[in-house]
Length: 109
Image (cartoon, rainbow, N blue to C red; front, top):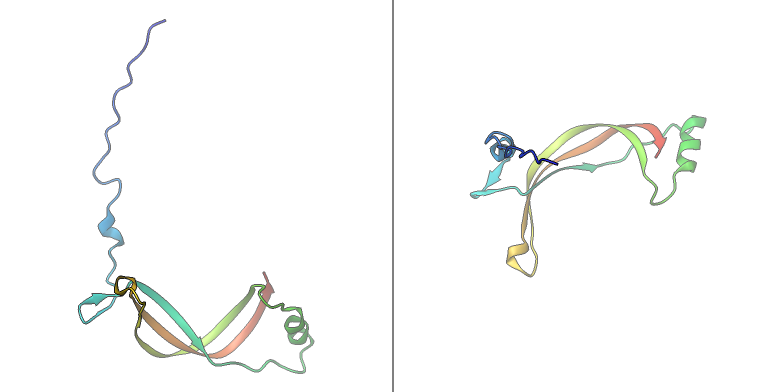
């Protein structure tokens, strides 16, 4: 039985370009944020005359995810620094704070 030699696989240089993931993430004091996030504040009253709202509220269980559609107003942007005992564990985050103005009930996940 004869063996056929397979040619070596040549990898193109453009298969993975890490630079495409280097997004213009905001920086402060010469440090680029390591994490970006959205923070929510506020609360909304549900319709106490809506049977659907009451059923959904009663169906919610602590620790069980729910799907909600939130409408809000951006009220701030900024940076925060999580400081640990070990200075190498510091983490700079960039965030946008949104004040919740309305909630549409979705489904229990």
